[in-house]
Image (cartoon, rainbow, N blue to C red; front, side):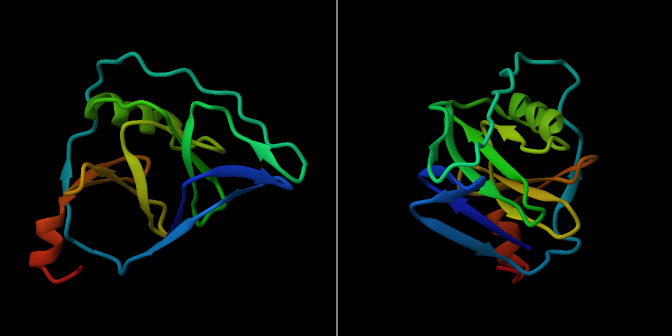
Length: 150
């Protein structure tokens, strides 16, 4: 369960690099979060996918719409786009992008990648939303602290 955060994104030789990086590692939290219903089926206006192609060059800037990027343990690059979306729209966008080769998300920021495929997203500073391609779960920071997993 290791993920990385980058703050200034560039592509070098087809690999996304950054000026600064933070590695996140966490022990599994089995049974902590409770299942919550999937995002509403009403389709909010979601941003169109950007055409991002990494060239085989030493340095490459990413489009201005890309705020930051994360590389998951499966080597997929998760692009976080500029702007914000409210929770239902952000969840709908993640559901649309989850199986893409390079997901593009907005509104929720990936913070943890589990080995079983679940990705945890931060909403504010106290709420985490996990998605595994089928089910959304949520947890608050206070829940994790009370149970001694953080």
